[in-house]
Amino acid sequence: MKSAWVAFVHGEEPIGVEPVILRSWQRCLNHMIDYERIADNDILPARLLEERLHLEESLLHAARPVLSLLFNILKGCNHALLLSDRDGYIMDSRGDPFFLTKSRTVYLTPGVSWRETVKGTNAIGTALIEKTPVRVLGAEHFVQENHFLCSWAAPILGPDAGTIGILDISAHAALSQARFLELAILGARMIEVNLRLANYERRETTPICGSTPYFETAAVGSPPLLRPLPASDDSQLLTYPLWVGSGEASRRILQRAAKVAATSTSVLLLGESGTGKEIIARHIHLLSPRRDGPFVALNCSALPDSLVESELFGYAEGAFTGAKRGGKPGKFELARRGTIFLDEIGDISVKVQLALLRVLQDKEIYRIGSGKARPLDVRVIAATHRNLADLVHQGKFRLDLYYRLKVITIDLPPLRERLHDVFDLVPHFMAKFCPDGKIRQIAPEVYSAFLAYSWPGNVRELENCVESMCALANGPCLTVEDLPPEILCPTTDLGSQEIKAAQEVEPHTQSPLSSAGTPPAGLLRVQTRETILEALSRSGGRIAPAARLLGIGRNTLYRKLKELEIKLH
Ligand SMILES: Nc1ncnc2c1ncn2[C@@H]1O[C@H](COP(=O)(O)OP(=O)(O)OP(=O)(O)O)[C@@H](O)[C@H]1O
Image (cartoon, rainbow, N blue to C red; front, side):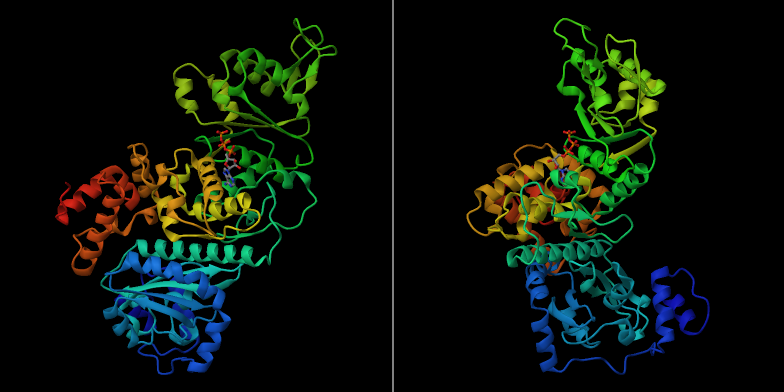
């Protein structure tokens, strides 16, 4: 990178530079920033800094517990944690004394602005301009005196989606840690959650009631963010919750759902129980041209086979003993001009599969016992938690129906693979289950436990968990004491594999303990040892629960115990 930087400042073509960095270097050239050192830092006089701190009190209030949490996690990593306001002025800084001293030489200190026009390419200033998380490593800094730094920064978004601050982790360039960016993003999200909770508290926002959705995910294509639902007279919008979640996986799901909605094709939703398949089905319906028609759902596994057929297709008068006079329309007819959602489609019998295939192929419905064809005017969305391809392989599901249903599939990953969404879902459910706003805060350790848990029941389990915590909480803050025992201290090994898998998919969910590729030294070693001992004491010396609390796999924990010479009694 150094050679690319040298080439660029000497007017030559740099090679191998990230586009985001190159754009920033170009801006620095345009602003005629001296690439060797900053002669004129923008330093606020004490009085003005005080005024700004006062102005940003709510941001600081929301950020402090998060900074403390991150500080504890990063202790010993020779780092600084910085919070800047929307103008790039550093408002708070904390970190390891050695690194803080070093960073003072380039004014990485409170009251100094790190906006790009003053300091050149740097994580805070560049994240402010690019409005996205940014990593700036060593010689990627435009100004040479900053080349000893590695920085990772994430914008903190306010309720109107504007950037209201930046959370930055800086460290010595020798220590390049890929997952610090993930940590900065998570920290920023936690601050946003705290700000939202503080908003509830102040009652500045619309009251929350029952199942009324308070948040919705932003329109497809806009950044990872939540905003209050606009007032709507659409009664369907008000009767069930919309998709909440702004992580990368959620963004992809919503994007795909939006594309699919514009077509009339069948859709197959795949995902474990509780991942939100029905919510997405409703979402597609509401975005589709059929939104004014009905949304009719049928859980195919909840009914005996004989009833599924009559539920789906209806029956004619006299079709069987006990049939109603005048017959009865089936779900397909009831869903006319709308959408039919067939949940647990993998559970229907081969006989019903054949009938369904005919309906989809011929686009006509025959009520049981009737020869009269009725035109099909329905969009079909099917869902299953089963592996349909396997069922086809075993001869339990028709291949032709499988192909007809899976024209477009949407995969809903389990919650443990999209833990970002926990930061959106928890406040959403708190608002739902504590509409009077009496419970307003969540201890950071609760989030740590949530992130370390495998959520076999997915969002449904998280929803139930928050509901029970809200019901049993003793004060205005949800704490680890309110956690159900299976989350605080899981007693079985169930899920440890899943956590491992989740960590592989989303490295940010790994505890820093698992990130150290080499045996930690000095302070980090002491800190790591203490953290592990604490986890073991909380788990009563049991390995699997301790590993889960730490967010690492059991094998990693065994390795750490050996490395750190911790003996189990
Ligand atoms: N992204 C989400 N945002 C808000 N609530 C959600 C989300 N995903 C799931 N839920 C909630 O979790 C519960 C389960 O969701 P849903 O019924 O859609 O899941 P499912 O995958 O269809 O489950 P199953 O396969 O067991 O029927 C519901 O109460 C729903 O409101």
